[in-house]
Amino acid sequence: MKIKEVIQFLEQKFPLHWQEDFDNCGIQCGDKERDIKEIVVCFDMSEAVIDEAIAKGANMIISHHPIIYKNSIKRIEPTDRVGKILCKALENKVLLYSMHTNIDSGKYGGNVLFAEKLGLQKLTVLSPHENQFCKLIVFVPTENSVLLKEALFRAGCGNMGNYSHCSFSSEGIGSFKPLVGSNPSIGKHNRIERVEEERIEMIFHKNKKRQIIDTLYQNHPYEEPAFDIIALENLNKEGGLGRVGFLPKPMPAQEFVQYVKEKLKLESVRYSGKVQEEINKVAVCGGGGASFITNAIAAGADAYITGDLKYHDFFIPENKMLLIDIGHFEGEHFIREIIVSLLKENFNIFATHFTEVESPVIVRA
Ligand SMILES: [Zn+2]
Image (cartoon, rainbow, N blue to C red):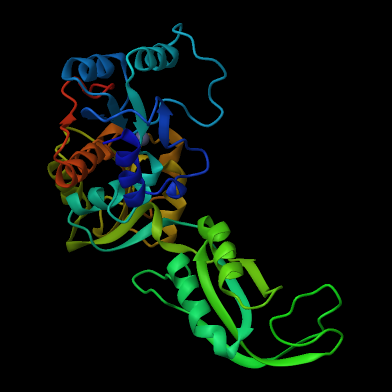
């Protein structure tokens, strides 16, 4: 089995188009055409993890954080941390692959697991992805509409949450005059033709645009099909960073802080804010989620748990919301569990190892 087949599987579960704009998920370096041997899963790539992979006979490392961020490096030399890691991986034919904000955002991804560890229920997305959908409006002779719709559904149109085959149709009259040089399937040259047509409307992910336009041309009877593609501002309620949910039962803020420490096995946290009141609705975002404090307030959360907060971030909620900083690693490290179990459950022809050489970079003392 080739490495690229494993990647194809992972990207079906967590597509690369789910990643944030700043990110660089996917292959960092290496040749995906090689046969897969074994896989090591880690949080951050390091020389130690590459040594571990070599010792275990693995030729693929999957990390949460990318080693190369968008536009971050211009040359690879073993003179700095990133260069040393990339050189070592390439010299030893180990492919480096990252699952970062694509797995954070997903339906079964890091933030969902984070929320589940706290027992949160009725989850919604804290910062839903925007500008991901388009609408197709196409006009087709009524007698051809069923076949065209079926082809467009197969190409990825009409999916909304847990619903497929979503469309809207209205009927009307289309008119056109085929000019000399045209090859009309209906009508004659230089005569205005009027045809009973169906106007079909369907939503699709912008990632499928090319495929959908090709399908439309292949399955529409007209030489020049009339269609519009419109970019939508609809939010993607299923994907995006962070989650918001409700505790199984409300609890006083001080008790909640202890509850968080217990559930996430933390020795300490940093917090401020609404410490006197009851906590019911909770927002979470693994990693560094300072930029979503306002989203958590807007969602009506009583508490927001994230990492990497600066001193001044704690002023933003103006004591209207409990703000807890558990650390960056502490809110994300369990993503490794998702990747390891996904691979173990689906592949038995190669071994997947949870790294044994990684510990948090920052030590709490
Ligand atoms: Zn992170």
